[in-house]
Image (cartoon, rainbow, N blue to C red; front, top):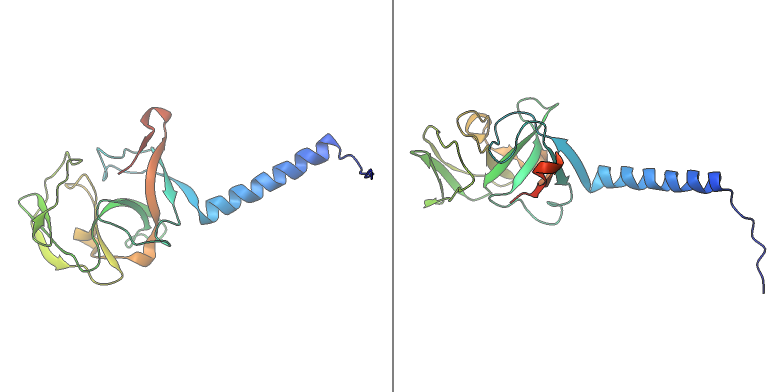
Length: 174
């Protein structure tokens, strides 16, 4: 049996393909991955101004943030801005900073990624349920949980997992 089908024009096929691609791109950006531009020096030397990171927006739908992960979140100080910091304390942890060293539950938290450690003593503080304690990697200039307090998990946009721009900075984040 031979089917009699109309042949689509090349232009129509192009428009349909483009429409499907745009819908898929919108859905992926809205629900799965989004690119964010780094603005500021608070995460140096890990991240620099104008680098672009890809953020997994589903990462915490499937699990909870873990110590050491880099997250993007809605700023508690300027709600129209998104900030990027490293998770240091999760619910139930007791965090303190003594002599430029971070302690989680009384144990030294190793931070080989830090270049700028200078920080005033802080804590101890216990991270309550539904919150995180976040710090920037450039401690002397970072506005983080030492200044705005615990970060509500509801403000987290997702986990940054790769620097994708500029291409010479392309690398996975811890």
